[in-house]
Image 1 (spheres, rainbow, N blue to C red):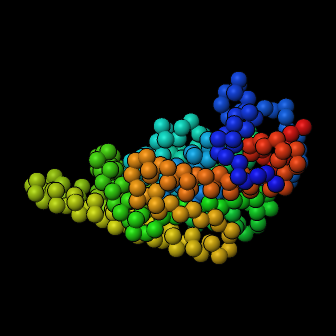
Image 2 (image 1 turned 60 degrees about the vertical axis):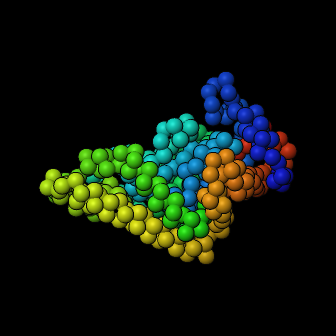
Amino acid sequence: MMGISMSISQQRHHVLAALDISHGPGRLKMGTLTPWLPKEKVVVVMGATGTGKSRLSIDLATQFPVEVINSDKVQVHKGLDIATNKITLEEQNRVPHHLLGTVNPNADFTASDFCNMALMAVESILSRRQLPIITGGSNSYIKALIDDEDFQFRSKYECCFLWVDVAMPVLHQYVSERVDRMVKNGMVNEVRGFFSVNADYKQGIRKAIGVPEFDTYFRAEPFLNEENRVRLLKKAIQEIKNNTCKLACRQLEKIHRLKNVWNIHRLDATEAFQLEGREADEAWNELVVRPSTEIVAQFLYSGATEEVQAAGLPFLPPRYHVA
């Protein structure tokens, strides 16, 4: 078994050594790989809204050749990037993302739709000899994918579950402040563009928290004086904060239920959320990134041939090993 005490910098060195940098970033050297294991491996990053799931996925991409599959049933839709808190292109750091902002905003996106598209994405990623990381807060969709009735997913893939957890009082404060930042960044005008007097808030992207809460405000806005306009706007923003906190609680309850049937690795990021600046980043790296990297490395190398382990190579899909 590969020594789990390997430092992150050492792992990064081995990752770079196995990548064909001359042919562009993230391309594994094709000639070094031959078949050896039947099951492919998939990582799943879970957590309540605002806990840093996307951030961890990008951090893991600095250690392993990763492509991300979004499992947030709202973020899969096009539009409302601020209101749905989609990861930005800059934050993606050139890591390929799938099922992110691709579906018509007016279309419903069911669990069945997610399962079909996610399976295709997983196969596509593995065909490029990359590591699929499924990331998002729609736990019911993730469960539908992994525990399907035909046992299709489990029969083909082995999963490693990472759960980024933050104490609820701390998380509630964070998501409240996040809503304020979203408003500052233009969420109100963004959502106004999707407003319709005949809007159906049970369909498509309009189901997202941050859209129906503004309905009363947008309807009344043309007829309000400044004082009442500000008052009604504050009420809508507070409702968004409350509903986001309720969502986080529901997501956490779901994860606790899944924890009874899945082997989920909990990563407590609370301290990182209580700090600021460099101290917060250091805490995040120590409490979340480092243990996650070790967990994923152990998961990927489990059952690998001795020569792969001895080489200290990064993730290779199970069908390959060093010739």
